[in-house]
Length: 371
Ligand code: GLU
Image 1 (cartoon, rainbow, N blue to C red):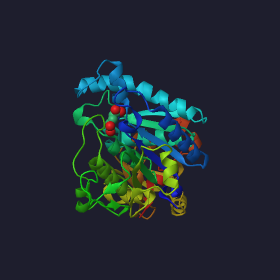
Image 2 (image 1 turned 135 degrees about the vertical axis):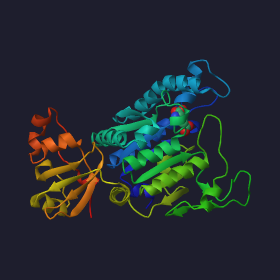
Image 3 (image 1 turned 120 degrees about the horizontal axis):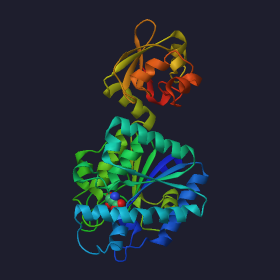
Image 4 (image 1 turned 30 degrees about the vertical axis):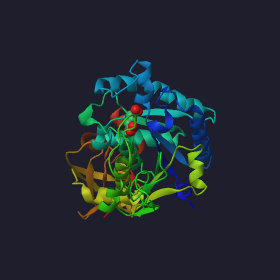
């Protein structure tokens, strides 16, 4: 069984060179149709699919008369604004034939680094998936300047995969996977079918040098992306995208390099919550809440007796039992002021107290780890 068959939540990264004809700036429509068929097939098996696609600059530049040569940053930003419309339109047309709805989401580096923005982006993406849409993500090139930019969609895709706890990140490429050296120049280059646990310096060395041109990626950023994915417990895959029905090819046993993480996304996220964060506050809970937490439930406002500390939505807080011991740690869904107001109240009362309908839980069980 391929890693694709096992995965439920999948991120697919598509580069400019697969999607856009470099001469004409036109989308490779026939190829995209076959990708659309594959995505529809995955959706019909109940899998959730998110697309991270490049191509905005490559498509847009021609429409602004920026046809040849390297673009300056403001030109790239202008080109992206023009091209993104056409890019999204192309995906919607192709996926719409299968009754799928595309949802465009443009992210910047900050959305994956700043905790509050990260949580917002995560919530929106998971909501879109829950509603059955296919998120189509690109970097918000029009506002991202060099210092605050991913610059390549390989790492953006990996951050997105980590953000939504995807099981699998597929990076479609112009090559079928990782080789010990560049096979185009070195006849001794051997194919690497699998990398386990972590990216060692040896693996890094296989990637060679960075590419240039319309595509910002290359093996170097793909390996960097694989490292991000592994850290989040997401399996990463590099495989050939230049063929029609590239995802079907994977299921049929087509060659690919698979990077297998030690943990799964759930454990990796929980380890991150438990280990790497310094709690900004404390939530004291009653015996009923303690029992609920121990049986794997979320922490509801009703079970919270007292609140200490200064925290915002998304900060890490410690959960304290009636005997004063820290029993759990989690990411709180409310600012400390709001949390204090709804503490001890039923979930149904939140809207009346705060004036808006917030989350039902004080800490959702996905954001909570028992200690
Ligand atoms: N975000 C860029 C675009 O849409 C591409 C970045 C990349 O090639 O990885 O044109």
